Length: 75
Image: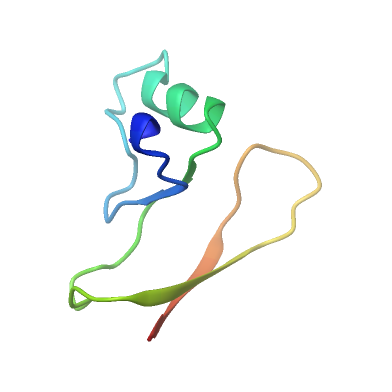
């Protein structure tokens, strides 16, 4: 992912890595290279194709993540 200059990874699971991984290696690698991660998406009814992705995170004063409303607009 990092080697291919991908800017964002979205996953339809609660986390991009195992909950047993206390080192958070995947998160550290991706975020450390500027790759944004959106977890917990519902992609069940999304057909392949070009989309505009809009991610609207809740503005929180502190922390390293936030709940977000994510929208896909067909192109």
